[in-house]
Each structure stands twice: as structure tokens, then as C-alpha cells.
Amino acid sequence: MSTSLSAGRIEEILRREADHECPGIGDSKICVKIVAIAELPTRFGRFQIAAFWNNRDAKEHVAIMHGEVFGAEDVATRVHSECLTGDALGSLRCDCRDQLETALRAISAEERGLVLYLRQEGRGIGLLNKIRAYSLQDQGLDTVEANLALGFRDDEREYSIAAHMLHSLEVRSIRLLTNNPKKINDLARFGVQITGRRPHVIPPNEHNRFYLETKVSKSGHYMDLSGNLHLEEQGEPIVVEGGKP
Image 1 (cartoon, one colour):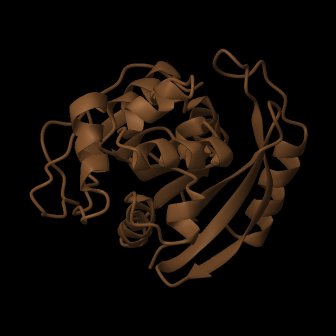
Image 2 (cartoon, one colour):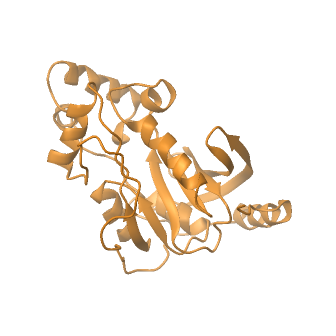
Image 3 (cartoon, helix red, strand yellow):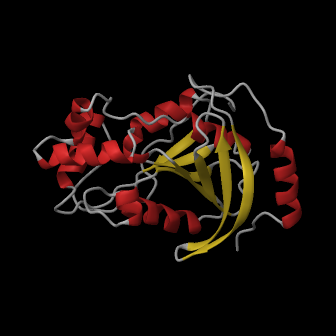
């Protein structure tokens, strides 16, 4: 049975965070703080949810916490970027909803773990531009080509907010559920210590196989699209030097 934050501990954290100010992280000097913590029972398990405000654009992000993560090491962590069409509407063009649900189930089975949910719709290009990119994909472009045709990089996301969120949660090190080398490198660059990687591969369907193949061929994602669902630890741990942000 995992422990969670008591009412007294939550009050202490929120009191501390209310006055938080720092120089910020990354090129945009992003500074975040926790503004609320509440219970979150879900179909995937019981969690607590911490709401974050950031000083860059006032977008709201959340940490979905299982067990006591404050001050912990080697915390199983998934960093998930918002996808309205997948997460909420069940789109089959991507694997985002399956990734989110699988991560929540995996985290709920751990003694302690985190899902950081970031408001970075459409790989950071926003909802409207994502639909424009979909239209270009309907005409034959892949996801990378569509983003480039709209004047964006293939992936506009960055993870300084996630790094600061981990710092605010006092997480000392993480085991990251990801297939994305850019996510690993960005978090490491912002001072997150990563002790290992857990593959997070979702079997493709007829609508998203080309999308997933493009992730592998053009974005270098670590995926085996043979149809097997990988959640086990694989390979040597990734040890990243560096302290907290």
C-alpha cells in the first residue's frame, strides 16, 4: 500500500511554494510553482494531483503522483505532452491515449511514481497548427514533413518545465518511461538525473503505423514495432551527471 501526502504536508508544501521565485530554467527562464494538491481516484488507480503555474505563458501543468515522491530517488516517471485528439477524443492517428493510459497503469503498480502532464499540444505547435499538419498528412506528407511545411521544427517541445516540476517535487532521480532520445537529452541538460529508461512502446494500428515508423526513421525513437508491448526494464541504466535545476 503506497503512502501519499497528508493534509499537513500538503499545507506545508503550498505555503513554501506560494513565495517561490527563482531565475528560471532554460532559454525562456521558466519558473513554476505548485498551487494546489488534491486526491485523484481514477480507473487506473488512486493518485494525488499537483497543479503547477508557470511564469512564461500561464499555461497550467500537472503532476499525477502515486505514493510519496517528495525527496525520493529512482522515481518511475512518464513525461506526457497534451494531445486533445488522442487523450480526450480517442484518435487512432497517434498512440498518445494508449501511452497515457499505459503509463498511469504502470505508475500505479509502483511504490511511487509520477506522470508529468505538459500543455505542449501537437509537439509544441498548438492545436490549430496540429490540425493543419493533419491536413497536410492527409495529402501524403509525414509528421516531420508537415511540421516543416508549416514553418516549424519537427518537434517544438522542450522540457525545462518538466525539469523544474521535478525540482519542485524534490525528486532526486528518475527512471524515465520513454522511447524519445530528445526527451532524455533535454531533461539531462536541465539537470535531471536519469538512472534508467523503461521502453514505452504501444503496438501500432492501421491508422498510426506510418506515424510511428516516422518517429523511428526521422526522430530516432527507440521502438520495436513488431507488435509487442514493452514495459520491462531493458539495457544498461542511463546515468546522467548533474544536480537539480
